[in-house]
Image (tube, rainbow, N blue to C red; front, side, top):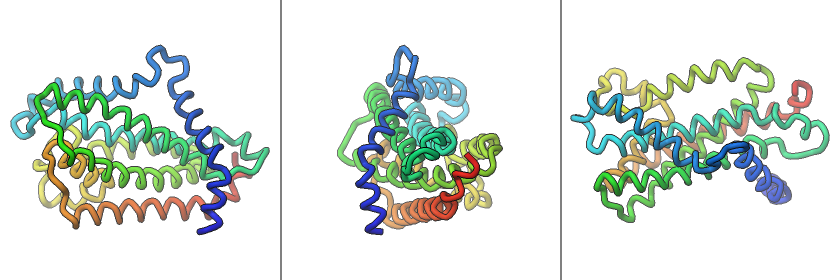
Length: 258
């Protein structure tokens, strides 16, 4: 463990440069640039509110904020894992020429997505104020479910980056998986409409508890129970360590496939 920490510190400057490069490339040739990090979830919130508010408005208080919170969490997971999946192949020319810890490439893309997601919190605050919601210190604890999702995204991103080196069709398969995850996550519908016999399937979704906790902290200003917070963190850590394990075991073979 000490050697891994030393190795990371040795390449930390390169890691930060990769994050900067990923953010710049994401908005290259864009007129509005990083402002799209704020406009994208806001526009999606408007579309989802117009389409689904008539169906679920009676069951959900402040539908725009409800939709936006769920959308932000899903968007971060979807974007970060998709970016991480392509990271090894996209940087194959560097990997072949010089030694660089390979995990830096998917990790930098996940971190860059996390930064742009934090910027996306600005429109969330604005929508909360416009719709008459009050802000309090408990809202700041929303960083906890975000960190849990960050760990989950690292695990899934490293796993996908590994599989994508050997199985290039993974990108197409993962787009279907993301669609399933989106509908399994209560982004625009209330979790209360899920029948009890199907709840255990929905709760396997790593985004479910994260979204529920995030909304409780943002919309209700209430702390999650210790059990839910602990289980969610443990689940996220398990996914993270699994992704690290798979990546570590297979990374030496990347050079033969990229």
